[in-house]
Amino acid sequence: MEDKDQLEDYLIVVMNKAIEKAASVNQAELDAVTRVDMPIIPGMEDMFK
Image 1: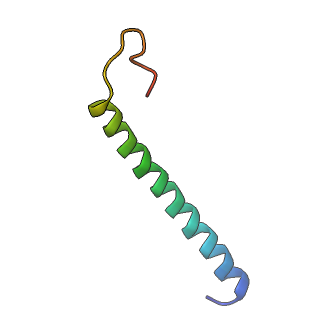
Image 2: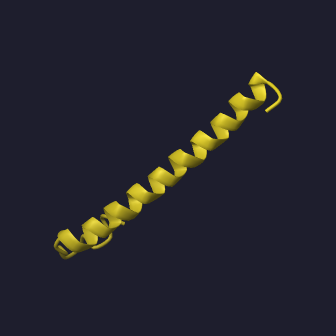
């Protein structure tokens, strides 16, 4: 890195990518849990999608 501003910009990009990845993993895990553990109530099939 050439200077402080470049490093800050790089860190922001990396942190944003990490946050997006964590949110994606979290959503996938929640989807898996709701499919397995939640009973299907008539009329509410789309509530947890």
